Amino acid sequence: MELKHAERLRGTVFIPGDKSISHRAIMFGAISEGTTEITNFLQGADCLSTISCFRKMGIPIENEQGRVTVHGKGLHGLLAPSDILDVGNSGTTARLISGILAGQAFSCELNGDASIQKRPMKRILEPLSAMGANVKSIKDNGCAPLAFASARLHGIPYQSPVSSAQVKSCILLAGLYADGTTSVTEPVISRNHTELMLSAFGAEISSNGTTVSILPHPKLRGLQIEVPGDISSAAYFIAAGLLVKDSEILIKNVGVNPTRDGIITVAKEMGANIVIQNKRTVSGEPVCDLLVKSSDLHKTTISGSLIPALIDEIPIIAVMAAFAEGKTIIKDAAELKVKESDRIFTTSENLRRMGAAVRPTEDGMVIEGNPDSLYHADFESYGDHRIAMSFAVAALALNGTSTVHGAECVEISYPEFYGDLAKLTGVSSFNK
Ligand code: S3P
Image 1 (cartoon, protein in one colour):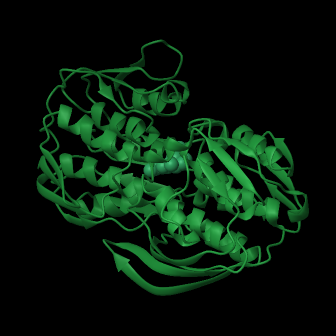
Image 2: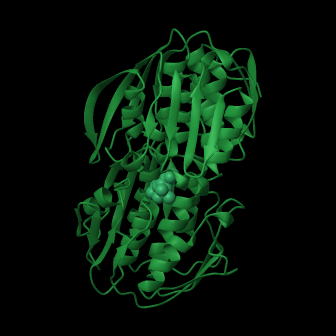
């Protein structure tokens, strides 16, 4: 994809459905009784992988005209799949579905693409095994492919070494099938969509500090769910509006759950002109519109308890830091290494290509901001959707014409991304 320097960005963008919430709506709908109707469902490849896995387990799911209908079969209604469950590139599908599979009375296998086969699954295999699950890494390397067989699960208190909503959700879902209370304590609270949505479906789930507890064998009932827009997708437009001179854009339908909205906190702390408008609640989640204007940004430090609330936004925050005055420090974010790509490497490498002074560290990076030293570049997505989108935005703020190689991977979380971005620059599409 070729992206030229943009003179200005103007207009309105409506943010597509949240990826995390879309996955959960399918999964929880499938194990509930009755119908779950989902609107503004994210039609990204990751969420389609979740639909395909549940269809393979006998759940009828219609996906037509902007509405997804899941015909749930209850906690014990899934059927043994006749084929391997393929999660594609989706870590959320792999880890959350594993909690459900651990509680089933059938055997099955789960696998995914080359990236999934490198991502750590030990973080769920250990607690699931402690609950009595019969699950293993087939190649015994702590990664997918995974094999599941039936087992009786018992509830455990689990102290997670990482703050990860995928790990937390996996264990809580297994807890639905256990013989007593299951609880998960994490170092810092991670996104809480599972807690909010499972409770709305009828689960007995409660939070106390960074501990979440769930009781087994609830009667889950189907729901109507409108999926709020994904703040992780909105982040690219926030950055684009701030970095491209003479811009003013309205970003509509942005989910601002406090466990996810770290990008807004950080952008404001860097000097961003962002006005929050029309705050409302959609399906139990806070949502708003954001008015963003070009701003001169300055350095910041991002660390500690803020990290889980912006973990997926660090590549685009790093781009903002390269255009900001002063030295930005990102630390306590070693989780970046085990995302769809090693994002410490892939972000630093692309920043370097555009002339930014960046030093990767063990748990983050240090970026010496200097807008005057930056120039157009050939970027590589490394097959990672968030890297492709981050550097497409950088390209609009750089001089000349930049190229993003492997740009099509935005399909994973935002199929309309380039079209939506192009419209703000006044053209209908970018050149491929
Ligand atoms: C997600 C949790 C996060 C995030 C991912 C989606 C979820 O992963 O990076 O994109 O939907 O629960 P971790 O739980 O591994 O931090």
